Length: 109
Image (cartoon, rainbow, N blue to C red; front, side, top):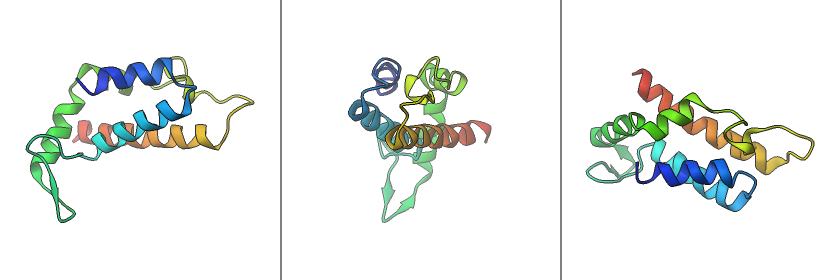
């Protein structure tokens, strides 16, 4: 929860500030693949079960559930498509949905 509440705030209110959005999405992406916090780690490129367990706990957080249930431009402005959309916006959307897809797959089992 410590990592996700500020992340959601960044994505909701700073969605049009590309440097903040990109770095926040990179953190979300890293966490969704089991970034080695706590006991979980990746050693020599191999995943360890503790990492997956950490991601499963992550999916249960209310902040992550909010993102899984409210992934629209109404909540996250960088997801909107308008006349001024550019390549950076598309990359941000791709990173966001890739991370959410990973979290959803963990949630589905």
